[in-house]
Amino acid sequence: MLPDGLLTDYATKFYGFGTWRAKIWFVGIEEAGGVQESDVQARLDTWRKSNSRDLEDAPTFYPASGNMLWHGKGATLQPTWKQLIRVLLVARGQAATNEEILNYQRSTFGRTGGRECLAELLPLPSPSAAAWNYHKWSKLTWLKTRDGYQKYVSLGRAYAIQQKLEQHHPRVVIFYSSTWHRLWGLIARGSWGQAIPSKLMGLDRDGISFYVMRHPRAESDAYFRTIGEFLRMKHRSQSGRV
Image 1: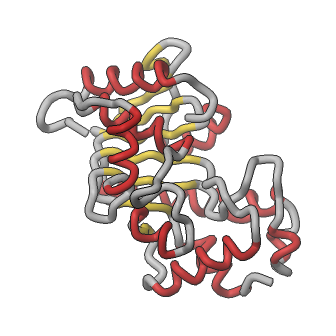
Image 2: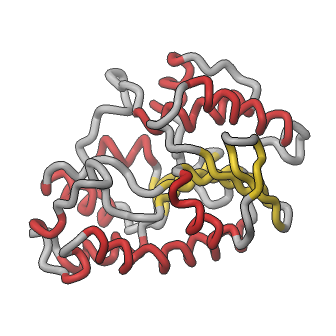
Image 3: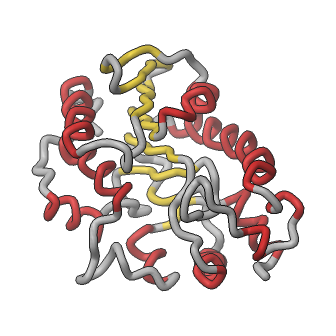
């Protein structure tokens, strides 16, 4: 069984990868993974050994926890990250070929000293929204069902992300997964309009541009290139560049 104390700490204190000081933040629902109990245990142990930071360094953390798929010489494209990186590179006016995306993913994406923040609303990795394995791996009552877990952690973590926004004031925040737009609106503290009709919701508040785009696994490369081009045009000044 997963250790109760460490699991609870991870669920309430760990938010993702990169740096809160970044000009651009990506906020998603949850990470994929968590197929085996041993995979989750390795993540918990790695997090504990790195002083239980709220944001980790992705190119260091994943290999240290035994996941060699996305970093190093044998790395392959991570399905969600590749589209987030595509948005970034296009927004910065850089080449966004699969080779360039893989190079960025392998060594740069989600660095604690890097240029982006990758936060998750829900902390525990899961193979899919329909899967739930933690009731087999923990005796904690709030992990008996996915619904109970989401109710236990989502509002508190949404509030914590909102507080980080107010503290660090990024230039751009992109929420991905449009089905969660109501909760994203609570974090952004505003009502969504159409930044790109039928493609991208948006609102501007206190110098921060908030957007809701579709999940990276749900759309084509062309869709995310369009999002990147929109950001490049809107935020192309030196002060606003992401």
